[in-house]
Structure formats: structure tokens, C-alpha cells
Amino acid sequence: MRLCRIVVLVTAACVLSGPVMAGKIVLKDPSGDDNGPGSYQYPTAAEYKKGSFDLTKVVISDKGDNLQIKIHLKAKIEDPWKSRDWPVRGNGFSLQMAFLFVDKDHKAGSGHSQGLPGLNVNFKNDAAWEKVVIISPQGNTRIKSEINTKAKSFKADIVLPIKVKVSGKKLIATVSKKDLGSPAAGWGYQLVLQSNEGYPGKNDLLTRKVNETRGEHRFGGGRDDDCDPHALDILAGKAQADKSEIAEQHKILKAYSCSGEVKLAELPMVYP
Image (cartoon, rainbow, N blue to C red; front, side):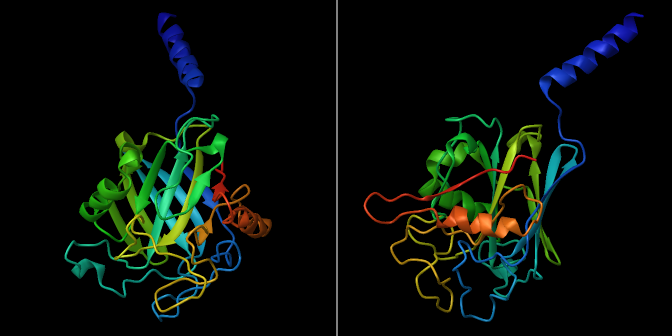
């Protein structure tokens, strides 16, 4: 009888403390929206192939002490600039860079409402983030150096993967639960897809700018005054790949102002 009571109490404690992750979290995104607010264009160089920045799905899987984050894109992920031969060894791809922002409490005023330097985005007041995972072709040594120079105030809440690899159309990152935590009910997520920049601006965290006119290695369809969101694809709506989420993404990323006091686009979270 006593054993039964213990089992009941333990079960009740688990329910009261909130369910931990079981299995997978799947967040989907419609294809054909890798154009930011609807106007962005790929650079002209042949390496930037159609669909290379078109997010289609994010899958977060429980792997015991770690989490596996799979980012699915529309095009095969390639390594045209041979990242494995860089002075600071890279991760086997060259073009893409992804930021997975996590809101752990869904409370207004809690967490960071600013995005990371170079993304030119903020987050809604009730969707501020507590942690962000950076998935980059650059090795962690280079990323840490950039963080110390350009994002020191966010350093404690930036999570770098233990391992990053490529498989076909997927970027696969492994992160420690000690660093990120174990996903629970009520957590929110936002995936911002960007492009890796080996020679970034002095305030940009390895991110590539979007200019008014595209060039060989510059995205076009944005602005040259650097107040437009530097995000090529994000999660929107309920992250179910509904076509209406394309219009929702465009609406979110168009909502910025560069005249007078600059107002950056504000991103929401998806709460599965």
C-alpha cells in the first residue's frame, strides 16, 4: 500500500512540475517563402542555388542527455567554399546559418526582446527568448570570438552545438540539455534562417546583409540603410506549413520603419 502511495505521489509531482519532452517536436514551414518580407532575392553567384534558404521543417528530438535539431531545407546543402579546409575547421557546409530562439516561459517582459546583432529583428514582448542555438558552418572557436566581440551581453544565453553535420537537405545539430534545457509544455520556438558571412560587418554576428540591389554575394530587395530584417525565412502562424503562413511571414517582416525613430520587425514565437 505504501509503495502505491509513493507511485501516486511521484506521478502527481511530475504532472504538477510540467511534462518534459517525449519524442519529437515538429515545426513545419511552407516552401517558396525564402524571400523574407516577400521582396528579397538571392545573390547572383552560382553557389546560391534556388531553395538553399527555404526552410520546410524543424524537428527537435530527445536523445537522452542531448537534443538533436534537424533543419530541413528545400535544396540539397552543399559546401562550395570547402569549410572543412578553412583555417578554423568548419562543419561541412558553407552558405546557411540558422538561429533557433527559445522562449521558456511565455511571460511578458521576461527574456531578451532584442535579436542577435546582424539580424535586425526584435521579439514581441510576450515572446522574448531565454536561449538561442546558433547553427553555423563556422567552428565554435570562431563563433565564440565573434560573440565576445559583438554579443557579449547575450553570451550566457547563446548555446553552441556539440556537433553539427549535414545530410542531404538537412542541417543536423546536437546540443546538450545542460546548455539548453529539456523542452517542456509551454515553450515557444522561432527559427531564423540567414546566410553565413565569413567577413561580416563590424556589428554583425557572422550574418550576411540584405541590400537594395543584389550582387554576387549580397541579397537584394531590401534596403541599404541597414534597418530591414536580415531574415530569409522564419516560422509563422502555427508552423503547420499552411500556405497562409507565407502571407503571415511577409506581414511580420514588413512591419518595420526606417524613418524617424527606427522600428525593427518584431518576431513571434510558435508554441506547439
